[in-house]
Image 1 (spheres, rainbow, N blue to C red):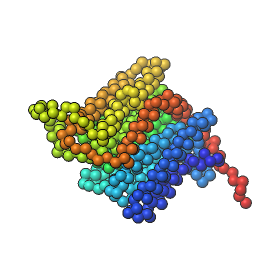
Image 2: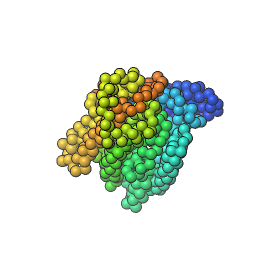
Image 3: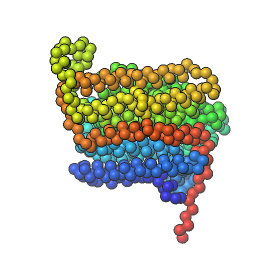
Image 4: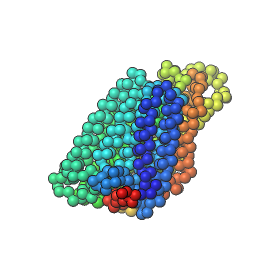
Length: 537
C-alpha cells in the first residue's frame, strides 16, 4: 500500500490521538490546548484535500479502501474513501477549524475539556463518513453523539442545560433504534458490510426481505432524527439556538451526517439493483423532506431571535436535501451536493456572526424594537435627525457579513446558494424531460425550494433592519480579529465555490455518477486484497 492509502485512516487517527494527548494537560493551559487542537485540525484539513485529489484521480472512479487489521472484507473492518466521503471530511474539517478559531477568543474557557470533546466529535464525524460497515457506523455515531452531549452542555446555564437534557434524551432513543435496526439487518442477511449487503439484498427470500426492510426502516428513523425530518426534528431549534456559538456552528454538520448516510445507503443498498427492494423508503424521504421544508419555513417567518431563525433554517436545508434525494433523479444529485456544501458553510458562518452582532444588545431592547415595528414609532423628528449618521467600521464589517449570509441562505445571485438551487432545478427538469411529465410532488418541491428562500430573505431582512439600520441601543460591539476571521473565511469559501462553480459541479457530477453505479463501490471493497509484507522473518 502506498502513502496515499495510509492517509485514509488519518482523519480518524489524528483527532483521536490529539484528544487523548489533550486530556492530561491542565485546564489552565487552555492556550496550549487550543494551539495543539487547531494545529491538528489544520493538518486534518490538508489530509481531506489530499483525499479529494486522490479520489478524483482514482481509475474508473474506484474507491480507496483501507483494511484495518489487514483482513479482507466482509470479515474484516474496512474504511472506504470515494469522492463523496472525501468531500464531506474536507467540509466538516473546514467548519471545525473556523469554529475552533472563534472559540479561542473566549468560549473555550466556558467549561472544561472543550478541545478534547471537539476532537472526539471529529473522530465520530469522520469515522461515519469513512466506515464501510453498519456496526462501525454505529460505533462512530455514538462517539460523535457522546462528544456532542458534552459540547451541548458547554457553558452551562439553565436554558442550555434544559435544551441539552432534551437533546441527550432524544439522541439516546435514536441510538437504541439504530442498534435494533442493525440487529434486524444482520439477522436477515448475515452481514453488516455495506458492499456485501448490496450483493445479498437482491437474492433474499420474501421472509428475510420483510425482516431486512423492517430493520432498514427502524435504522432510517434513527438517521431521520439526526437529520431533523419533521416531526422527528422538533428538538433541533431549541437545542441549536441554546448551544454556544462555536458549538452551534459545528452542529450544522451533524444534520448533514444523517443526510450523508441516507444518501449513501439509499443508493448503495436500495438502488436500481436491489430487486424488489429498489427505491425502498424513497417516498418517505421525498414527502418527509417537503414537510420539513414547510415546517422550517414557517419557523423562520415566526422567529424574532437570530439563533432560532438560524436553527429553523437548518431544518430548511436538511429538508431540501432529503426531498431532493427522495426524487430519485440522478441529475439532481450534483446540485444537491452543491447545495449541501453552500448551505452548511453559510449556516456555520451565520451562527458565529450572531454572537458578534448581538453581543452588545439588550433583550428588553429587542422586545421594544418588535413592538415599534408592529405599532409604529411616532417620534419622526428623532428619526430624521439620525439620517446620514456615520456607520462605525465594526458595524459595517458585520453588516456586510450579514448581507452575504442573507444572500447565501436565501439563494440570491450571484453567490453559491443561487448556483446550487439553479443546479437542482436544472437537474430536475433535464431528468424529467427524458422520462415523464412533472408530478405534483415535484412541483411542490420546486415551489418550496423557491418559497423557503423568499421566507429566509424576508425574515433576515426584518432582523437586519432592526439590528443595523434601526438599532435603538446605539452601541457598537467589541469584536476581536480572531472572531471575525473565521466568519470571513467561511464566506470566502462560499465566494470561491461560486467562482469555481464549474469545476465544482464537474467534480460533483462525477460523484453522482459513481453513487448511481453501486457496483463501483462494491467492486472496490470486494477486490481489495490484504497487503503482503516482504520484510517479515
